[in-house]
Length: 235
Image (cartoon, rainbow, N blue to C red):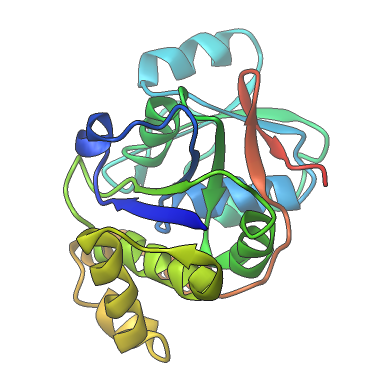
C-alpha cells in the first residue's frame, strides 16, 4: 500500500529520501494555485526560478516573467503571483515565475521520481491520478520563509482525506495535517483568517485571490515537472 508522508517546510525536505517518491509541492496562497491556473488556462509551460536575478535573466531574453516577494508584485516585472493575471492573453506561451516560497520548494524537489503541484483548485484530479501511481508520496508544503503555514497544511490534509482508503500513514505530521483539515473542512476560511499569510495578503488587497485559491475542483490540469518547467500532465 502507498505511503504518504508530510513535510511542513522546505527547510526539512533534506530529512526525506525523495528519489523514488512523487513529491506534491503545495503553496495554496498562491504559487501552486497560480501555476495550476496558468496551465489550465492554456499557458504552455511555467518555468519556476528561485531568485529575482534568475527572473531578470529570463526577462532580458524576452520571456514574460512573474515575480512576487512578501506577497507583493516585484517592481519591474510583467506579472505578479495572482492567478487572475494568468487567465487570459498568454495562451500557448512559456512564462517564468519566481515567488517567495513556492517556486523555491519546487526547485528543492528536483531529485524526486516525479514532481507535481497541488492546490484546492485541482484537488480531485490530482488525487485521482495519485491513486493510480505505485510510488510513495511526499506532500511538501512551501510554508512561509521556511516556517509552518496553516493553509498549506490544510491542503495536505485534504489530499490525505481524498486518498484515505488507498494509503498508509506512518507519520505524526501527516496524521496531524489530516485531522486539522477534518476539523475545518466545511469552513476553510474561518481558520485561514487566523493565519499570518491571510493577514499579509489581505493588507495587500488581494482578498479575491484568497477566496479563489480556497475553491475546490475548479480545474482539472495537473502540473508536472518536465525538463525545465511545469507542464500539464498528459494522461
